[in-house]
Length: 154
Length: 249
Image (cartoon, rainbow over all chains, first blue to last red; front, side):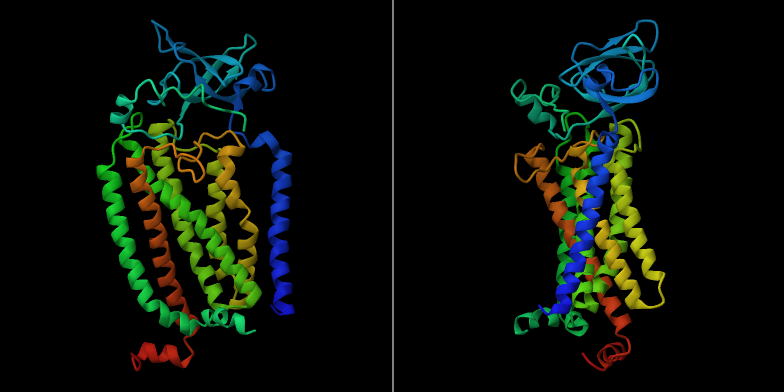
Protein backbone atom coordinates (compact mmCIF):
# COMPACT_ATOMS: atom_id res chain seq x y z
CA UNK A 1 0.00 0.00 0.00
CA UNK A 2 1.44 3.36 -0.89
CA UNK A 3 2.26 5.89 1.86
CA UNK A 4 -0.64 8.24 1.05
CA UNK A 5 -3.23 5.51 1.32
CA UNK A 6 -1.56 4.16 4.42
CA UNK A 7 -1.89 7.60 6.01
CA UNK A 8 -5.56 7.73 5.10
CA UNK A 9 -6.05 4.24 6.50
CA UNK A 10 -4.53 5.37 9.79
CA UNK A 11 -6.84 8.41 9.71
CA UNK A 12 -9.87 6.13 9.32
CA UNK A 13 -8.63 3.86 12.11
CA UNK A 14 -8.17 6.86 14.41
CA UNK A 15 -11.77 8.02 13.78
CA UNK A 16 -13.13 4.59 14.65
CA UNK A 17 -10.91 4.11 17.71
CA UNK A 18 -11.46 7.61 19.13
CA UNK A 19 -15.24 7.51 18.69
CA UNK A 20 -15.36 4.05 20.28
CA UNK A 21 -13.22 5.07 23.25
CA UNK A 22 -15.23 8.25 23.83
CA UNK A 23 -18.50 6.30 23.70
CA UNK A 24 -17.14 3.59 25.98
CA UNK A 25 -16.06 6.19 28.55
CA UNK A 26 -19.42 7.95 28.42
CA UNK A 27 -21.17 4.59 28.75
CA UNK A 28 -18.95 3.64 31.68
CA UNK A 29 -19.59 6.98 33.39
CA UNK A 30 -23.34 6.63 32.95
CA UNK A 31 -23.25 3.08 34.27
CA UNK A 32 -26.63 1.98 35.52
CA UNK A 33 -28.28 5.15 34.18
CA UNK A 34 -28.72 3.19 30.99
CA UNK A 35 -31.01 0.77 32.78
CA UNK A 36 -34.69 0.99 32.05
CA UNK A 37 -35.60 -0.31 35.49
CA UNK A 38 -34.14 -1.07 38.91
CA UNK A 39 -33.55 -4.67 39.90
CA UNK A 40 -35.58 -5.77 42.92
CA UNK A 41 -32.44 -6.07 45.05
CA UNK A 42 -31.53 -2.43 44.43
CA UNK A 43 -35.03 -1.28 45.38
CA UNK A 44 -35.08 -3.34 48.58
CA UNK A 45 -31.55 -2.26 49.54
CA UNK A 46 -32.60 1.36 49.33
CA UNK A 47 -30.67 2.33 46.21
CA UNK A 48 -33.88 3.50 44.57
CA UNK A 49 -35.53 6.64 45.98
CA UNK A 50 -38.59 6.18 48.17
CA UNK A 51 -41.91 7.86 47.34
CA UNK A 52 -40.70 8.82 43.88
CA UNK A 53 -41.85 7.27 40.64
CA UNK A 54 -39.39 4.58 39.57
CA UNK A 55 -39.46 1.41 37.54
CA UNK A 56 -38.64 -1.99 38.98
CA UNK A 57 -38.34 -5.26 37.10
CA UNK A 58 -38.47 -8.85 38.23
CA UNK A 59 -40.21 -12.17 38.00
CA UNK A 60 -43.67 -12.69 39.42
CA UNK A 61 -43.33 -15.46 42.02
CA UNK A 62 -45.88 -18.22 41.31
CA UNK A 63 -48.65 -18.37 43.86
CA UNK A 64 -48.33 -14.80 45.06
CA UNK A 65 -50.93 -13.14 42.82
CA UNK A 66 -53.93 -12.16 44.96
CA UNK A 67 -56.95 -10.41 43.46
CA UNK A 68 -59.01 -8.28 45.80
CA UNK A 69 -62.60 -9.52 46.02
CA UNK A 70 -64.29 -6.10 46.02
CA UNK A 71 -62.16 -4.10 43.57
CA UNK A 72 -59.72 -4.38 40.68
CA UNK A 73 -56.65 -4.29 42.92
CA UNK A 74 -54.07 -7.03 42.51
CA UNK A 75 -51.20 -7.82 44.86
CA UNK A 76 -48.18 -9.88 43.85
CA UNK A 77 -44.51 -10.38 44.72
CA UNK A 78 -41.66 -9.95 42.26
CA UNK A 79 -38.15 -11.26 42.71
CA UNK A 80 -34.76 -11.07 41.06
CA UNK A 81 -33.57 -14.21 42.80
CA UNK A 82 -31.98 -12.20 45.60
CA UNK A 83 -34.72 -10.06 47.16
CA UNK A 84 -38.51 -9.94 46.99
CA UNK A 85 -40.76 -6.91 46.53
CA UNK A 86 -44.50 -6.74 47.13
CA UNK A 87 -46.47 -4.77 44.53
CA UNK A 88 -50.06 -3.59 44.52
CA UNK A 89 -51.71 -2.52 41.30
CA UNK A 90 -55.16 -1.10 40.68
CA UNK A 91 -55.69 -1.45 36.97
CA UNK A 92 -55.79 -3.73 33.96
CA UNK A 93 -52.82 -6.09 33.60
CA UNK A 94 -51.35 -6.94 30.19
CA UNK A 95 -52.35 -10.30 28.68
CA UNK A 96 -48.92 -11.82 29.08
CA UNK A 97 -48.66 -10.91 32.74
CA UNK A 98 -48.68 -14.07 34.84
CA UNK A 99 -47.03 -16.28 37.40
CA UNK A 100 -43.43 -17.04 36.55
CA UNK A 101 -43.33 -14.25 33.97
CA UNK A 102 -41.15 -11.17 34.09
CA UNK A 103 -42.78 -7.78 34.56
CA UNK A 104 -41.64 -4.17 34.67
CA UNK A 105 -43.55 -2.05 37.16
CA UNK A 106 -43.79 1.74 37.23
CA UNK A 107 -44.75 3.13 40.60
CA UNK A 108 -43.70 4.43 43.98
CA UNK A 109 -42.20 2.47 46.85
CA UNK A 110 -43.72 3.63 50.11
CA UNK A 111 -42.11 3.72 53.55
CA UNK A 112 -43.63 0.32 54.28
CA UNK A 113 -41.59 -1.18 51.44
CA UNK A 114 -44.61 -1.95 49.28
CA UNK A 115 -44.60 -0.69 45.71
CA UNK A 116 -47.79 0.95 44.53
CA UNK A 117 -47.84 0.51 40.77
CA UNK A 118 -49.27 2.97 38.29
CA UNK A 119 -48.38 0.84 35.27
CA UNK A 120 -47.44 -2.81 34.77
CA UNK A 121 -45.74 -4.03 31.60
CA UNK A 122 -45.04 -7.65 30.75
CA UNK A 123 -41.42 -8.35 29.86
CA UNK A 124 -41.45 -11.20 27.41
CA UNK A 125 -38.55 -13.64 27.48
CA UNK A 126 -36.70 -14.68 24.35
CA UNK A 127 -38.13 -18.20 24.08
CA UNK A 128 -40.63 -19.23 21.45
CA UNK A 129 -42.31 -22.63 21.70
CA UNK A 130 -45.29 -24.08 19.85
CA UNK A 131 -48.19 -25.18 22.03
CA UNK A 132 -48.09 -28.81 20.89
CA UNK A 133 -44.45 -29.16 21.87
CA UNK A 134 -45.05 -27.60 25.26
CA UNK A 135 -47.84 -30.07 25.97
CA UNK A 136 -45.64 -33.07 25.30
CA UNK A 137 -42.52 -32.01 27.17
CA UNK A 138 -44.38 -30.62 30.14
CA UNK A 139 -42.46 -30.94 33.35
CA UNK A 140 -39.05 -31.33 31.76
CA UNK A 141 -38.07 -27.97 30.36
CA UNK A 142 -41.05 -25.84 31.26
CA UNK A 143 -40.42 -22.44 29.76
CA UNK A 144 -43.43 -20.81 31.33
CA UNK A 145 -41.52 -20.93 34.60
CA UNK A 146 -38.39 -19.02 33.71
CA UNK A 147 -38.02 -17.15 36.97
CA UNK A 148 -35.44 -19.48 38.43
CA UNK A 149 -33.29 -19.51 35.34
CA UNK A 150 -33.59 -15.79 34.87
CA UNK A 151 -30.48 -13.78 35.63
CA UNK A 152 -30.55 -10.07 36.27
CA UNK A 153 -26.86 -9.58 36.92
CA UNK A 154 -25.79 -8.17 33.58
CA UNK B 1 1.15 -2.61 -7.19
CA UNK B 2 0.07 -5.50 -9.35
CA UNK B 3 -1.58 -7.29 -6.47
CA UNK B 4 -4.01 -4.40 -6.05
CA UNK B 5 -5.08 -4.33 -9.69
CA UNK B 6 -8.26 -6.39 -9.19
CA UNK B 7 -9.26 -4.00 -6.46
CA UNK B 8 -8.87 -0.93 -8.64
CA UNK B 9 -10.77 -2.57 -11.46
CA UNK B 10 -13.59 -3.18 -9.01
CA UNK B 11 -13.59 0.54 -8.45
CA UNK B 12 -14.23 1.28 -12.10
CA UNK B 13 -17.85 2.36 -12.50
CA UNK B 14 -18.01 1.04 -16.06
CA UNK B 15 -16.72 -2.40 -15.07
CA UNK B 16 -19.14 -2.49 -12.14
CA UNK B 17 -22.12 -1.47 -14.28
CA UNK B 18 -21.43 -4.08 -16.92
CA UNK B 19 -20.75 -6.89 -14.46
CA UNK B 20 -23.76 -6.27 -12.24
CA UNK B 21 -26.36 -6.27 -15.03
CA UNK B 22 -26.71 -10.03 -14.77
CA UNK B 23 -26.10 -10.29 -11.00
CA UNK B 24 -28.82 -7.82 -10.22
CA UNK B 25 -31.41 -9.89 -12.10
CA UNK B 26 -30.34 -13.14 -10.44
CA UNK B 27 -30.27 -11.60 -6.96
CA UNK B 28 -33.66 -9.95 -7.54
CA UNK B 29 -35.31 -13.22 -8.56
CA UNK B 30 -33.71 -15.02 -5.61
CA UNK B 31 -34.77 -12.29 -3.19
CA UNK B 32 -38.41 -12.40 -4.24
CA UNK B 33 -38.52 -16.19 -4.29
CA UNK B 34 -37.02 -16.40 -0.79
CA UNK B 35 -39.25 -13.61 0.54
CA UNK B 36 -42.41 -15.30 -0.83
CA UNK B 37 -41.52 -18.71 0.61
CA UNK B 38 -40.36 -17.22 3.92
CA UNK B 39 -43.44 -15.06 4.44
CA UNK B 40 -45.93 -17.80 3.55
CA UNK B 41 -44.03 -20.30 5.71
CA UNK B 42 -43.59 -17.98 8.66
CA UNK B 43 -46.98 -16.29 8.65
CA UNK B 44 -49.03 -19.23 7.45
CA UNK B 45 -47.47 -22.53 8.43
CA UNK B 46 -45.15 -22.06 11.41
CA UNK B 47 -46.88 -23.11 14.65
CA UNK B 48 -48.40 -20.49 16.96
CA UNK B 49 -46.47 -19.58 20.09
CA UNK B 50 -47.59 -21.07 23.40
CA UNK B 51 -47.91 -17.74 25.19
CA UNK B 52 -48.20 -15.09 22.50
CA UNK B 53 -50.37 -17.00 20.08
CA UNK B 54 -50.20 -15.59 16.57
CA UNK B 55 -48.87 -12.15 17.46
CA UNK B 56 -45.33 -13.51 17.71
CA UNK B 57 -45.35 -13.97 13.92
CA UNK B 58 -44.23 -10.38 13.54
CA UNK B 59 -40.70 -11.65 14.28
CA UNK B 60 -40.64 -12.97 10.71
CA UNK B 61 -40.58 -9.33 9.60
CA UNK B 62 -39.16 -7.56 12.65
CA UNK B 63 -36.04 -9.65 13.26
CA UNK B 64 -34.85 -9.82 9.61
CA UNK B 65 -35.25 -6.08 8.95
CA UNK B 66 -33.59 -5.22 12.27
CA UNK B 67 -30.65 -7.54 11.56
CA UNK B 68 -30.13 -6.16 8.06
CA UNK B 69 -30.58 -2.54 9.17
CA UNK B 70 -27.56 -3.03 11.45
CA UNK B 71 -25.50 -5.07 8.98
CA UNK B 72 -26.33 -2.44 6.33
CA UNK B 73 -24.69 0.19 8.49
CA UNK B 74 -21.41 -1.72 8.31
CA UNK B 75 -21.82 -1.94 4.54
CA UNK B 76 -22.25 1.83 4.42
CA UNK B 77 -19.42 2.65 6.86
CA UNK B 78 -16.93 0.25 5.26
CA UNK B 79 -17.81 1.57 1.80
CA UNK B 80 -17.17 5.06 3.19
CA UNK B 81 -13.81 3.97 4.62
CA UNK B 82 -12.76 2.42 1.31
CA UNK B 83 -13.76 5.67 -0.39
CA UNK B 84 -11.69 7.72 2.05
CA UNK B 85 -8.59 5.53 1.75
CA UNK B 86 -8.56 4.68 -1.97
CA UNK B 87 -10.59 7.67 -3.27
CA UNK B 88 -12.80 5.14 -4.99
CA UNK B 89 -15.82 6.84 -6.53
CA UNK B 90 -17.83 3.64 -6.81
CA UNK B 91 -17.40 2.99 -3.10
CA UNK B 92 -18.87 6.39 -2.27
CA UNK B 93 -21.82 5.65 -4.53
CA UNK B 94 -22.51 2.45 -2.58
CA UNK B 95 -22.23 4.39 0.69
CA UNK B 96 -24.63 7.10 -0.44
CA UNK B 97 -27.29 4.63 -1.55
CA UNK B 98 -26.98 2.39 1.48
CA UNK B 99 -28.21 5.22 3.73
CA UNK B 100 -31.88 5.55 2.63
CA UNK B 101 -32.31 1.77 2.41
CA UNK B 102 -30.95 1.43 5.92
CA UNK B 103 -33.26 4.18 7.13
CA UNK B 104 -36.28 2.39 5.65
CA UNK B 105 -35.32 -0.93 7.26
CA UNK B 106 -34.68 0.71 10.64
CA UNK B 107 -38.03 2.46 10.47
CA UNK B 108 -39.74 -0.82 9.63
CA UNK B 109 -38.01 -2.52 12.57
CA UNK B 110 -39.19 0.21 14.95
CA UNK B 111 -42.72 0.16 13.53
CA UNK B 112 -43.15 -3.62 13.69
CA UNK B 113 -41.65 -3.57 17.19
CA UNK B 114 -44.22 -1.01 18.32
CA UNK B 115 -47.08 -3.01 16.80
CA UNK B 116 -45.85 -6.13 18.60
CA UNK B 117 -45.14 -4.27 21.83
CA UNK B 118 -48.75 -3.28 22.42
CA UNK B 119 -50.23 -6.79 22.75
CA UNK B 120 -47.09 -8.28 24.35
CA UNK B 121 -45.72 -5.68 26.76
CA UNK B 122 -48.81 -3.55 27.07
CA UNK B 123 -47.29 -0.46 25.47
CA UNK B 124 -46.27 0.71 22.01
CA UNK B 125 -43.15 2.48 23.10
CA UNK B 126 -40.63 2.71 25.94
CA UNK B 127 -37.31 4.52 26.04
CA UNK B 128 -35.18 1.54 26.97
CA UNK B 129 -31.59 1.11 25.75
CA UNK B 130 -32.43 -1.13 22.77
CA UNK B 131 -35.21 1.02 21.36
CA UNK B 132 -33.38 4.30 22.00
CA UNK B 133 -30.21 3.08 20.28
CA UNK B 134 -32.33 1.97 17.31
CA UNK B 135 -33.82 5.47 17.11
CA UNK B 136 -30.25 6.85 17.06
CA UNK B 137 -29.49 4.48 14.17
CA UNK B 138 -32.48 5.85 12.27
CA UNK B 139 -31.27 9.41 12.84
CA UNK B 140 -27.74 8.49 11.71
CA UNK B 141 -29.12 7.06 8.46
CA UNK B 142 -31.35 10.11 7.94
CA UNK B 143 -28.48 12.44 8.83
CA UNK B 144 -26.19 10.88 6.26
CA UNK B 145 -28.94 11.02 3.64
CA UNK B 146 -29.51 14.71 4.39
CA UNK B 147 -25.80 15.54 4.55
CA UNK B 148 -25.37 14.26 0.99
CA UNK B 149 -27.72 16.99 -0.17
CA UNK B 150 -26.08 19.72 1.92
CA UNK B 151 -23.05 20.11 -0.34
CA UNK B 152 -22.81 21.48 -3.86
CA UNK B 153 -19.57 19.61 -4.36
CA UNK B 154 -19.99 15.84 -4.58
CA UNK B 155 -16.51 15.07 -3.26
CA UNK B 156 -17.02 17.12 -0.08
CA UNK B 157 -20.39 15.46 0.48
CA UNK B 158 -18.89 11.99 0.08
CA UNK B 159 -15.98 12.66 2.43
CA UNK B 160 -18.11 14.22 5.16
CA UNK B 161 -20.69 11.45 4.97
CA UNK B 162 -17.97 8.80 5.17
CA UNK B 163 -16.58 10.36 8.35
CA UNK B 164 -20.05 10.61 9.91
CA UNK B 165 -20.75 7.00 8.95
CA UNK B 166 -17.48 5.87 10.59
CA UNK B 167 -18.17 7.79 13.79
CA UNK B 168 -21.69 6.36 13.97
CA UNK B 169 -20.38 2.82 13.58
CA UNK B 170 -19.84 2.64 17.35
CA UNK B 171 -23.63 2.53 17.73
CA UNK B 172 -23.97 -0.90 16.12
CA UNK B 173 -22.31 -3.00 18.87
CA UNK B 174 -24.23 -0.87 21.39
CA UNK B 175 -27.56 -1.81 19.79
CA UNK B 176 -26.52 -5.42 19.59
CA UNK B 177 -25.34 -5.69 23.19
CA UNK B 178 -27.81 -3.21 24.75
CA UNK B 179 -30.10 -5.99 25.96
CA UNK B 180 -27.18 -7.62 27.82
CA UNK B 181 -25.46 -4.51 29.16
CA UNK B 182 -28.54 -2.83 30.60
CA UNK B 183 -31.91 -3.82 32.01
CA UNK B 184 -34.23 -3.31 29.07
CA UNK B 185 -37.84 -4.12 28.42
CA UNK B 186 -36.74 -5.64 25.13
CA UNK B 187 -35.86 -9.31 25.52
CA UNK B 188 -32.34 -10.64 24.77
CA UNK B 189 -31.45 -12.29 21.46
CA UNK B 190 -33.34 -15.46 20.57
CA UNK B 191 -31.11 -16.72 17.77
CA UNK B 192 -27.65 -17.42 19.12
CA UNK B 193 -24.55 -18.38 17.21
CA UNK B 194 -22.57 -20.00 19.99
CA UNK B 195 -25.25 -21.72 22.05
CA UNK B 196 -28.64 -23.32 21.57
CA UNK B 197 -31.25 -20.89 20.28
CA UNK B 198 -34.28 -20.40 22.48
CA UNK B 199 -36.78 -20.96 19.68
CA UNK B 200 -38.32 -24.20 18.50
CA UNK B 201 -36.70 -25.44 15.25
CA UNK B 202 -39.93 -25.41 13.22
CA UNK B 203 -40.30 -21.72 14.10
CA UNK B 204 -36.62 -20.94 13.57
CA UNK B 205 -36.26 -22.28 10.00
CA UNK B 206 -38.62 -19.77 8.35
CA UNK B 207 -37.02 -17.04 10.48
CA UNK B 208 -33.52 -17.91 9.24
CA UNK B 209 -34.82 -18.09 5.67
CA UNK B 210 -36.39 -14.65 6.07
CA UNK B 211 -33.12 -13.20 7.37
CA UNK B 212 -31.29 -14.43 4.26
CA UNK B 213 -34.19 -13.24 2.08
CA UNK B 214 -34.00 -9.70 3.48
CA UNK B 215 -30.22 -9.72 2.99
CA UNK B 216 -30.85 -10.67 -0.67
CA UNK B 217 -33.51 -8.00 -1.00
CA UNK B 218 -31.09 -5.46 0.50
CA UNK B 219 -28.38 -6.45 -1.98
CA UNK B 220 -30.85 -6.18 -4.85
CA UNK B 221 -32.09 -2.70 -3.92
CA UNK B 222 -28.54 -1.49 -3.20
CA UNK B 223 -27.26 -2.78 -6.56
CA UNK B 224 -30.13 -1.21 -8.46
CA UNK B 225 -29.74 2.15 -6.75
CA UNK B 226 -25.96 2.15 -7.18
CA UNK B 227 -26.32 1.35 -10.89
CA UNK B 228 -28.57 4.38 -11.35
CA UNK B 229 -26.07 6.45 -9.35
CA UNK B 230 -23.26 5.29 -11.66
CA UNK B 231 -25.24 6.42 -14.72
CA UNK B 232 -25.95 9.79 -13.10
CA UNK B 233 -22.41 10.54 -11.95
CA UNK B 234 -20.79 9.24 -15.13
CA UNK B 235 -23.38 10.82 -17.42
CA UNK B 236 -20.74 12.83 -19.27
CA UNK B 237 -18.71 9.77 -20.28
CA UNK B 238 -18.98 8.16 -23.67
CA UNK B 239 -19.94 4.69 -22.40
CA UNK B 240 -22.93 5.98 -20.44
CA UNK B 241 -24.12 8.05 -23.39
CA UNK B 242 -23.81 4.95 -25.57
CA UNK B 243 -26.04 3.01 -23.16
CA UNK B 244 -28.60 5.79 -22.84
CA UNK B 245 -28.86 6.45 -26.56
CA UNK B 246 -28.89 2.71 -27.20
CA UNK B 247 -25.95 2.67 -29.59
CA UNK B 248 -24.31 -0.19 -27.72
CA UNK B 249 -25.95 -3.47 -26.68
